[in-house]
Amino acid sequence: MTPLYRSRQYNWAMLVIIAAMSVFIGVVSSGDPEGGAPWWVYPFLLLTPVAFGAMTVTVTYQEVRVRCLLGWPRRSIPIAQVRACTTFERKWFTALDTGVRPGRGEFRLNGRRGVVLTLDTGLPVVISAPDPGELLRAVEKARSHLPHKSGG
View 1 (cartoon, rainbow, N blue to C red):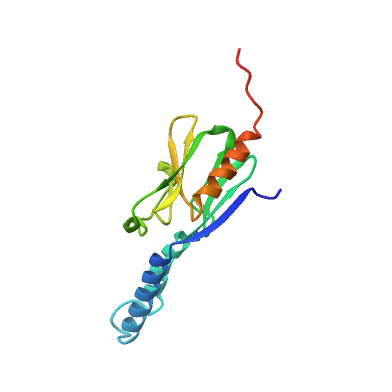
View 2 (cartoon, rainbow, N blue to C red):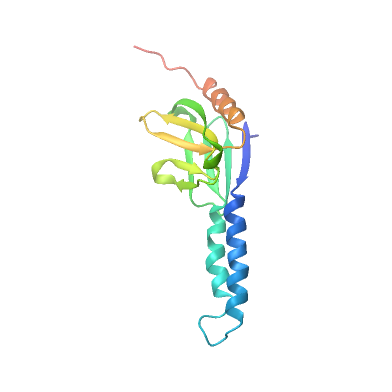
């Protein structure tokens, strides 16, 4: 099934900083072979967070799926559990703010813009998006295709 929305986003600031630190530590550690761990250990340790530097958000008629580069952390939210969806936009200086905390319902690689999904339980799930309006429309379109519950 073709997704209603798919977006891949990167935290470029984090990736550039980690790459620069890896090169610096790799060069420094290669100068003294007796001074510690082998040269490749330091860049490997610094490059490990790169797995969290990319995130894909996919919306289908059944669910909103959020997953990081290597597939963990990830979360699938059934569309039937979404009570409301709103967009948010913060000040420009929060663009470097990052938080990937699946247990808290937070998936922000760029903290400036995104959507907040309010679940039936009342808990919010914050998802950053480069185009929050499109993500909002996709979630609303999926919600409109849900079977209506009859009261009674």
